[in-house]
Length: 628
Image 1: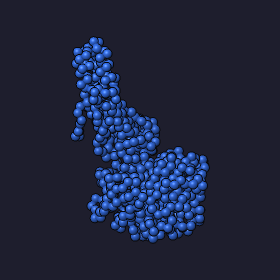
Image 2: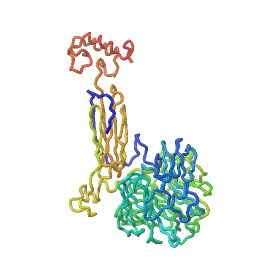
Image 3: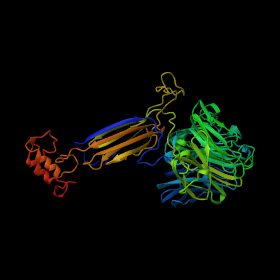
Image 4: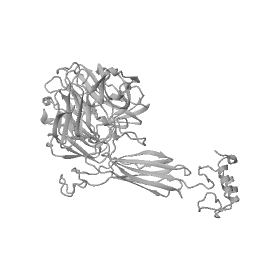
């Protein structure tokens, strides 16, 4: 590695500390990298096939900062490129070639849209067909991870080729994806893992083979050697099945590492009859409760519980991390006034943000738009929508939670919310037999350290005045013989889980004082990476705190405190040489120096003399040796 060094810091006194921290769930402090949320600089954008064939494919863009966003399709061999301006408070709509949702089942293809910018922005996927549309919040590359569980919904329309579907896509070359299908998919049997090799910008698409529950890909497990993205849904389905009409549904999946143990849900607008919910388990032995009652017990990893149509606002919670999807019922179902099937991801409260910039989508495709907002009871009256307080009368309490929910109509376009404490939002749109739901934004931190209970190891050392740091996260699998179970002696940490290090995912500066932080570029999942810290001004104190995070959210911390050597003549230690210092030297004349570093003994003869005072007058840091 090439290193550009400042001059050697000879004689500096440095304190170096490395600490292993338990996995962190709080908001991250000031950093050298952006937060892991739905704002990003780089997006891989997948479009699933719409059963009827999309009339319009669009990417909608907005953000907090003026920037230019470049889009290209297909990502690796573009035939379509454009650069558009994204302005705060506006939505920039980009029409994408319709071939972007053409995929061959069971094949790897270069058919993604790629969007990038120098500044962070927000992106939405919009797939439009009259009375069969949906939209989703896109997730940037820095939120990708290595474990997913597919969330879809079955269809009774396979006679027409309307199937459960999913796609996995890679941000890095040399990614090996392991798929364990819940049901038969193509030539692959249910429950039998198989591998797919992907390079950056490539995607792999599959559908269920049959209709009904036997063709539902929900619960399919995805794991990978490098971070990937997943999108899942159905080409066209009825919710519940047997209730006309069908609609295209999809959402961008959230990594299992970002799942929480609870989710707040609320009755949808135009659905007085209620919604259906699916709750997915990330671990064996998962019990699910709602409003202090029991919904299901003993679910295993990848299994889910589907509720009936529930009317009301609830807290869904579990003893293990879970994922909840809300399923909008069809327009002809009981209590439905407007709109058709749609699927929305419900965000755990641990991933809420304090502010959001979000947009409605679809323009004239949708006649009504709504915001569902979950806020702490203590914040009611202080929550802002587009800068104005939301009246307390708009909120309804969610029992046993300390939270309330408001359902608010929205005008078409960009909006913002703010609250003193984190809150959650979803956005909904409606038209005749048409609809969408998606989360308005979220954090996507690793708060569920599944399959990796070990902290990475941080170390740091001074080499010729430069502080060189190393982060390592490379423990092999506890399953030494590879038989898929923990044999005697293999469970080294006693947690009954086969653990294997997930690699380094994030390197960030928590504090930097008078130092430059230079991380070495790395691919998330690398077993080791490094960084350098260099002091800016060697006459001043310097310090740094660097945190490394692995793919499961475990962290380690490296700290440096550097004290500069004493300044000769600076007797009072205020980093200035002035009249006070000269006076102190004269007062001590004809006395021995305390040691070799005594700032009063300028000539090094081990005695404090008037000659030392005369020399220090020439070293004053201000004119006329003035005191600061």
